[in-house]
Image 1 (spheres, rainbow over the protein chains, first blue to last red):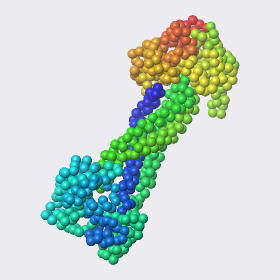
Image 2: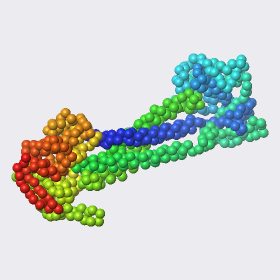
Image 3: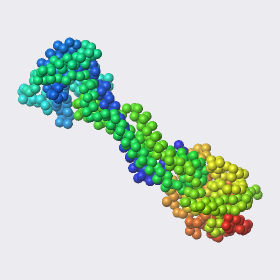
Image 4: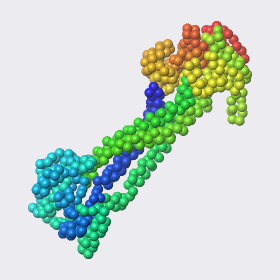
Length: 387
Length: 231
């Protein structure tokens, strides 16, 4: 600690340069933290998707509607235990920039199908009794200040009711949570209530959730469902939810590879920048380092001072960068737009702090060792004579 | 008086380009404890080289150098650094203060190598700055001080570890007459009142007049050795 003033003095020698270097490292580690957080968030989405049920979608395109009559045919396929049709009501609550997505389901069937929703049995019963009832995720309730018993008005953007309006009122009859409550952001309504009230798109479903008696036979059952509609104008494609999501993500690319690629590129660039800064700083202080040796600092001592300077700059800046990411990422991902899509708040995982610290040390060592060795080898007489 | 510095048959040479130039030729010298030794001579005569050898900044090619009871020619690099911290205070022509540190932080630097507590270091720094008459400028940075004041800070830094020997390389070379006089009087006080052994390289005969012994060097040898009464 007693050498801290010397390290601090060296960094303050050219404040603008130190600040710019610090800013570069902060930016690099902010990106590192945020991208790793997103990576973990995507992994979390994958974890939340269930392999325990099938999703039936239109073969034409993902959101194309299929006839509700498919539900009965799907239920008749051997091995199928429950089917829930799905309709979607897009709208907003209280203000246009607070989007809401309400998923219409057969909630009883949904609970049998084996999703990850954790709902109290009496609230499931209340949902059964209440046509305009909704079960809301605990995060959605928290964000909007809702509680069980509230009646909430939703202005729909994609449906018009038979009375000519687009305004809906729902009764909150319960809340659900997940293993990670941050991700409980969706709202479930009764399919029948929405279906009967809309003018257009009646008796249609954009997806069917399908419960199975034996998931080991899921591939055969999925094939049987698709075969059932092979000669229908509304052909289907069936897979489990996880496979669906993976296929969508594959269309974007290998996200893990992309994220790590960006991080490696940023850190690699950072190495050049910090190496150059530290080397330049040491070159400018040749006579000062020689004076330190003159008053009794050993060669190794001066070497460690230069290394400590690189470590201090790198670790402090990296800590600021990751801390910034850990504040900004949740703020960015807790907005209503993502929340309405069922995407929960993303956080920078704890491991990133440890890996970030290790990377900061690596950056400091790679950029600091050459000038530190140069400082160690500095000949006092030569340096003081300016040769 | 005991010899605090003893050089026997010291040879030192440097390589310039492809040429090897012998700067000191089989030099013999003894400096007694408490002496104020002035080293004079034309440029290239070997004054600074001799000073560097005595101060433990460089090693001889041949011969023995004993300073404060230690054979410098036999010490390793780290031993030499530790020895310098204990026994030698350096004063340079261009002060060589660390520009971003305040006067007191500059003076404190050699004490960072000791086991003194922060409070003890602070007390010692205050005493050293008082000794050179700069107590009221302790928090100022070198750029906020005059040349004479900067040199006094450098002297305080040289004295802070209570060294056996003060080695001064043209300490008044960058100062005006008045400031130079103040620095030389300060060195005289340190020599006479505190018994510090001082070795000072100078080109200035008026500065040399403060020395109690004057060595004239020429072409790497001691040309003349005169003991005299200080001004």
